[in-house]
Amino acid sequence: MEHQQRSGARLSPSSDTEDMTMSLAPRLAYFAGVARTEHVTRAAQELGVPQSTLSRAVARLEEDLGVDLFSRHGRTVSLTPAGRTFLTSVERALAEVRRAADEVRADADPATGKVAFGFLHTMGAETVPGLLQAFRLDHPRIRFSLVQNYGEAMIEKLRAGELDLCLTSPVPDAPDLVARRLDEQKLRLVVPADHRLATRRRVRLAEAADETFVTLEPGYGLRRITDDLCEEAGFRPRIAFEGEEAETLRGLVAAGLGVALLPPPAFPRPGVVELTVTAPRAAREIGVAWLEGHPDTPPVAAFKKFLLSRRGNLLPT
Image (tube, rainbow, N blue to C red; front, side, top):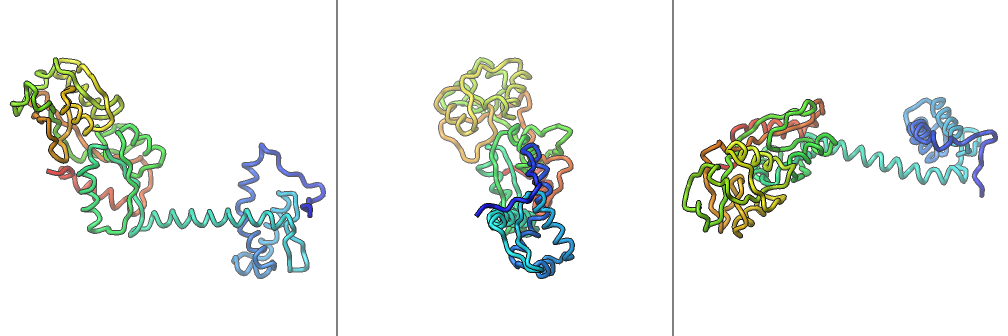
């Protein structure tokens, strides 16, 4: 059976689709309520709105669509073929809205909500697991969505609303971000076990000026720190390999492919020796960052407070 189109009614042109969607959205629940009860008065009672409001909303919906959705029989109504077709999609849309509403309420729940947390690859083996373990002693049911990435990528995810908080280095300085320094991590010159400097415990970075370096790729905070420290030591590093993960670089060093400036490993790596750098001072600051003006859910606020309480005691000893 063909849809019943209203005489003189005109469907909105495609350029007005967004405006039509905005005007239709508030009326969909009213339409579904009337369709479910097939009675305007009962639907108004169930929805908690005046009958006149409900009747006008449904009539306006039909006017905007340009089709009759109901056949009227006094206060009783029945769906037209067009109404049945429309109801199928409306019920799916309303179910999706309810699902989304339940999800965001669950994520914001103080006891069981979710935190989207980003951190550097170098903090994934030991630091972050230890932090989460300590935090969940008092918040055992809070959930986490964890993202490992390099600093600039995490900052972009903060700005895009994909992360609530991130641990990064260097500590960012941008007007749209709030950042707090939490701790400092010493960097070591990592050399192969058979290297000429391997018998030393301490070294000045300038003593590695003629060495080949393996580093993280440009864009990583540790790469920028490495370049800056080498410049401060009076040389520009000769780079043979660029990678994305610190432990991969340690493997390259163990294979005799270069030396590297790296934070301490979670576990000792055979085939390399880690030397304390005495000059220049080789360290990186670790901080937590979040988006300025972004409201925190209770779980995010609790985890942020926990991280700030760990100032000076963030990293494993």
